[in-house]
Length: 341
Image (cartoon, rainbow, N blue to C red; front, side):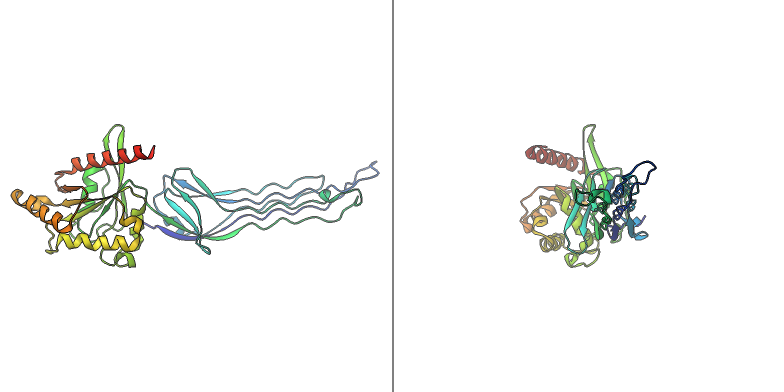
């Protein structure tokens, strides 16, 4: 299925039912009086996170959702039936915006979590409501109010503990394949990953974390170049970034320059993402003679003046991958402990 992470839809809550004007008419009852009932409330529109969904693609085909109208009141003081609410399922990780004001209506991060996006109209009042000591036979009622009509924008951000960051062909898909049961497309040409892939990395029975393989970014991504800002936002929910760099790229590109390119894109996108904990993962060490690997890695670290953790791996062969996974799990446990989770 094609990955879609943004959609704009229109939602309409049901109008409230109108109040009724009616008078009691019964044999042998001398004074009937008003008996018009109230209308029913209109149904509301809710969005609910559903773990079985992974994209917003369904909204390409249906863009309007409307809840039921409340029924009108009736004689004998009968209240109209309330309109049924509708619940629209969306993927976990969906942020809901008001398209007009850009206000955040909701952020659905847990399965089953709901957000009301359109309030149903209030019920109208029947003429019984207007009876008083001075007005024994009111001939007035109140119509139900209109339900909300709203244009909303849905934006999905993947929920992952760890995000893989790197230029195309850095080896992100190979790493997630090695660490988890996810099977993203792997090939020796750029942009083989066209949408985020999630994989669960299980360390043992009680320890696991979710890793996201974000599509390859290029220079200018923060302005929309390549796959662009569309996927940079998926890194914003992660606790840790792994910056993969190819130690021996086929095009002879400078690994240091490759790292700096994406550092600039992170900085341009947001200060928060720029300051996120980020580890350097030097990949494809199997392509160099073993006695040269450490020398090349040391040169890269020195030129970058890198002060965060550094790992040397081969995602293709699995060399160093398990050690990396264990360190990630330890880091995430420490973060959760510090946060009191």
